[in-house]
Image 1 (cartoon, rainbow, N blue to C red):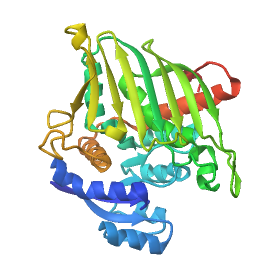
Image 2 (image 1 turned 180 degrees about the vertical axis):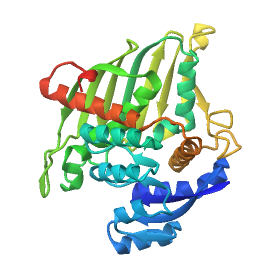
Image 3 (image 1 turned 90 degrees about the vertical axis):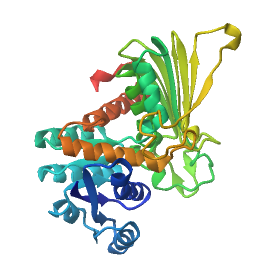
Length: 367
């Protein structure tokens, strides 16, 4: 086993998740590289010190450049706002340091292209943090599709729906400002990534993006509340995808349905330890969707628990992500999803925004 010094930028929601994952991943997966929590960074010295003490880092700073440039920080996790991703990643790659960046990859398609160029020019390990597709049930769904268990796929429906901004009485704030903080910048990347992971590239799309609650107490909302797309995958499959932060009653509506010539799959992240599988075999009277509870026979479940149906959670998907990042560093080979995969998501978002403005179908390759 070899130690590797980890620096994590951001100590809030995702900063904490990555800190906990890096502290535990070695024990969970018996990784050859064992993270050492070397330095954390936050916006003020006081908050940085608070995160250091809470999460177990050796040192803290409020200057991201100090963290990136420190020789004892050998790999970097970016869990800061999207608008900061590019500068931090470029600085890290200039020093030859591996980077795991939270989604989305930068605040724009231009940012993501620059980040991919910097990573590939430096030859550094790079990954983007799409954790939900790593849960055992969704990994199993990918395998079912790849193995042809539901036949030739004919249709896809996906959504990422939440209701944290559903109440029109909630005040205007940072969530209502800037494209990067809108639904297409914040929620859409996860389900677009899922669609690409499950069925491959999207070739064409038509989209509508809308602000429903433009006037909120204290100010105007300048970004989108929800959006929808009809898509055509490169494989010829048609699909529909919907994203919303105002979907009343939905807390983590990362869900998809996939139909094939021999069966179908349903999944909902609010019930992330189950997948629903339909097979077109046997007597018609006995056919129906079967609920399969994840267990040790499913991908990346056993390291967390030996009991079927006991379940994994959100934090466990971040630990799986940490394992993948460490393996990529150790082997010097790319582990999906790389920055280039993150750029592909941003490309689709850019195409969708353009389609919404033109009210027409667009080719993703034009973006």
